[in-house]
Amino acid sequence: MRAVRIRPTPDGGVPVVVEAPAPTPGPGQVLVRVRASGLNRGELLQAGRVKDGDLVPVGVELAGEIEALGEGVTGWTPGDAVVAHGTGTQAELVVVAAGALVRKPPSSTWAEAGSFLNVSMTAHDALVTNGRMAPGEAVLVNAATGGVGLAATQIARALGAGTVIATTTSVSKVKTLLDQGAHHVIDVSSQDQVSAVADLTDHRGVDVIVDSVGGTVFDDNLTSLAVKGRLVQVGRMGSARAEIDLTKLWRKRLSLIGVTFQTRTEEERLACIRAAERDLYDLWERRVVVPVVDRAFPMEDVGAAYDHMAKSAHTGKIALLTTSSAGDR
Image 1 (spheres, one colour):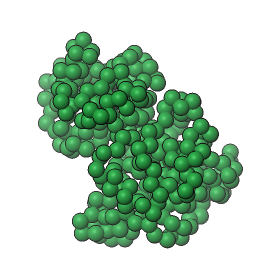
Image 2 (spheres, rainbow, N blue to C red):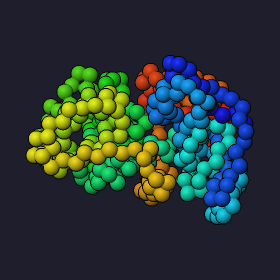
Image 3 (cartoon, rainbow, N blue to C red):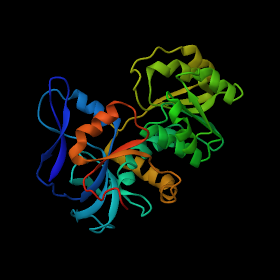
């Protein structure tokens, strides 16, 4: 089978397509023939760290059809259309845990489905499980045109946030964010986030912030939060370091929360999938919450796909297609 691997170089790994042995599902696992797999910034960062050693599998999400069932798997049938969260998913055949499967709705294309689960469960975990967003609350999403940012914007609006504020550095992306559920958009290339949030919330601040930027906006985020606000830190695109004014933390009784799947147990990871499925599946089926696919690349053009993500010019997700028909339903 064909599979994407990261080939080490002294300057950081590069993605390549190789021939690899087809995997076999073990107990509690299923084998999926992949139609599409989403590309996430985490894979780009992972590639940059691979400077020596062996070829490294890559990818965390997929959409495809069940090829075979491992021992003890019930409730699924070969041929079922599914999405899944796993490892090494940028390949033609992938083994995943049966508990990591979600049925693909007929309303979704393969490219959309392959780009859905990772960002949706991340955004849901940040907003709902950790951010404890309640209907009517005000939400701020930093870097909202990325995959997680757009998912958080859609989910916040769909689950009843009273005010959804999105930030971007590009005036050309403002309309997209408004179309995807934001009530207000702050172009931080020309507007001050703190002043804009104060104006939009009558100086109260927001209740939840989903942040993918990190240190460069950390102090502005603390200032933008309301009393008892929650800052959920998802990514560090701007900087991984920040200086904290503890007086702001103390005075407002703020909660600072970091989220990642890298340090979760298998049971915690599967619980995140089930929680996202519980709250989002119907919305996805009705196309209220749908991943925005910026571009879909055939697997053989994986290098171009990674380059496109590295330029940060995309809006939403980038998909890798393993078949020419993977953009269809």
